[in-house]
Amino acid sequence: KARDYAELMDSASPTAFSSYMFVRCEKRIEKIELNDILYIESLGNYVNIYTASKKIIAYLTLKGIEAQLPANLFIKVHQSFIVAFSKIEAIDGNQVIIVGKPIPISRNYRDNVMKVVEQLLLKR
Image 1 (cartoon, rainbow, N blue to C red):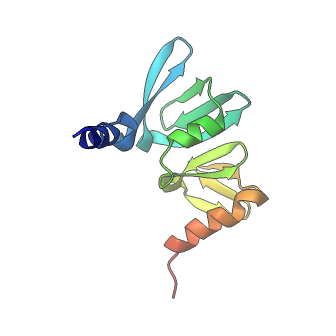
Image 2 (image 1 turned 30 degrees about the vertical axis):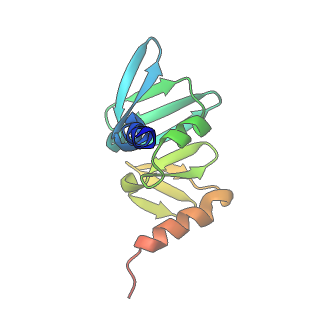
């Protein structure tokens, strides 16, 4: 019974299946839908979270927020950028284009990004 209860508690954790997250921004706690996030930019110990309607500055590290994001929806393209995979409009050389804004792809992350893109690339 104890094992069943522990498994039930683990599966009921809010991060296991939620489509949103809460972030402390200035003196407020903001709810952010994961589907609304376009990209996240690191600024040292702060991150800018860009959505279609607003920009949120939070006292977090990129590494910390990357651990909380689902890996199948977001991909790290640069030491300072994480992008929502579904929001990528194009890949142009060493940049991804999201809402008309070019975001650099670093040499360290290029192979990983291209591996994920090629899985979805239409072929002859």
